[in-house]
Image (cartoon, rainbow, N blue to C red; front, side):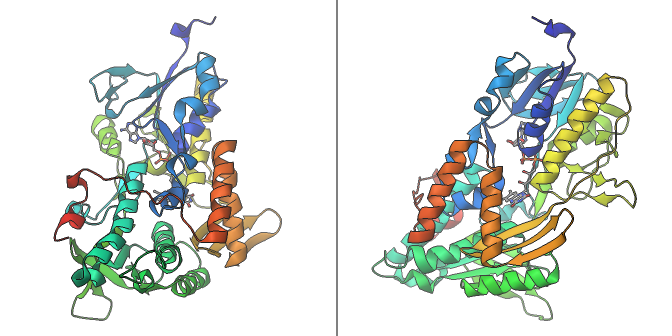
Length: 449
Ligand SMILES: Cc1cc2nc3c(=O)[nH]c(=O)nc-3n(C[C@H](O)[C@H](O)[C@H](O)COP(=O)(O)OP(=O)(O)OC[C@H]3O[C@@H](n4cnc5c(N)ncnc54)[C@H](O)[C@@H]3O)c2cc1C
């Protein structure tokens, strides 16, 4: 049995895409790893909107961290802790947990991801929850399903309960809006006596002049056309200036008077902010943060003056360093987090061997966004063939198989495949269970209902 006292101690904070990949990549290294996450599960965030819109149950897109990493735990190289890291002390090389415990490290990989950003208006959060965790997805699912129930019960408030606003026309906003329109037009249409769910309005509000701004303009146009076919009203050039329990106010490009939408259900998909651990790292190392609070890392993903700390995934403002050409910013997507996880693990092992760390290079395989049933857009980089752009049904089938392929675990893949096949033929969404949140958790729906 090797003496663990002599092994370098590696602490990894966060078991999302980046942290999980780093842990796996270090599986055979002669190090002692402590992986800390504040949840007991790894979450496949790209399918979180399916839980929020009642298409999938939570276990289909999440798996217990201990189960995923059981072999590394059994091999005696990995300790998994369910705890929140609240602070980092770079001078003493320790992280502090929520119960005050301090965990020492020789090498630290911080992969704590991002959270919602409300552009300085945190008071909007209670009226317009975002989608980042399973708890967020349950909250949104409750709000969407209960809105139809309120409309059935309160004839005088039908219009506002049947109006749904989604703020932000990025991939999450587009997915949410498209699927909510599907629920209104297909899933629920014959289940209410006093309302016609097909009269619900789903309004997607985007500040820029097109949705899916990260994709080429022709794919944005095709995405908007597909959204409109599903019954979504798309409002581009519309910058939200206020959100309250009754709806949304926005400034429309070229118009002086503000535009007001009365909507009792508002979804926030507009902004992200880095994990607060970015500020903790700034306080303890002096590292620069960008406007979203992300840690500005060195080309090798380390922190200037602290090569023993690496920051990866959505928390890092990292650049890709191609062999020839200028460095380019790395996007906040799961393939980038996974690649950074593997790179951080490789650099850590290089350092242990006394070799220099290598700069990070991101390999971009393209972008995908689903819009709803049989509707998606995709831009894919194929080896030898170059760029391929798909839209509509072929893009949707491609999206479906890519997401099933990348899900963790055979059981999860099978569950998702069966659920989607069922939903495809029946239009039903089987996870339509409302679990009551404590009253304080959904204030905007409690007011005046
Ligand atoms: C709704 C949604 C849809 C998305 N869709 C796509 C998509 O279709 N394609 C795509 O490529 N990307 C998508 N993304 C982005 C992608 O999920 C992220 O880029 C990726 O998850 C980043 O990985 P990460 O490891 O940096 O962070 P995360 O995966 O967010 O993991 C962070 C982990 O750290 C833990 N943690 C945070 N703070 C602490 C703390 N203080 N102490 C302990 N643990 C902590 C969290 O519990 C979590 O497990 C989506 C994101 C969201 C929210």
